[in-house]
Amino acid sequence: MSELSQLILDRIRDVPDYPQPGVLFKDITPLLGDPVAMAAVVDELAGLAEVDKIVGIEARGFILAAPVAYRAAAGFVPVRKKGKLPAATLEESYDLEYGSATIEVHRDAFKPGDRVLIVDDVLATGGTARATIDLVERAGGHVVGIAVLMELAFLKGRERLPEVDLHSLVIV
Image (spheres, rainbow, N blue to C red):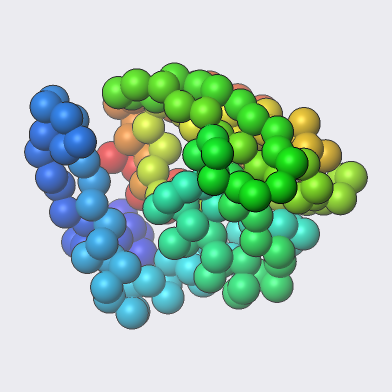
């Protein structure tokens, strides 16, 4: 295991039965509160690819994606839950491990061919990531990769993303 992986794992708290019974929630707030760990994560993610835009997925993906965009000298684009963006949007619905949701992005968020890295905290079933890829590409961006802090391998989300370069800092 790499030093970065151990640093991350040591700062993730398991919360059983959240947000509903049977779900083991991976709480990243201890990691976010550690400036050394947070800087290491941001530096690693920012160095993955030369891109024009970094997409952050609501809500915890925003926390990581915005500083990654800054460090990578790229623009930041939020992908939000339906009804949260003020201008004209495109939307995509999907299933997740404990329900369903719809996400949106502004129609004008990308110039044609913008190279895009999608950043999120956790890859679980892959539903959110798959919907985000489809949404970004419909909006004119070109997804060059997805980067996540943690991948929950037992949920097999990677299988839904075979055409995309997926980089997980930690796989559990």
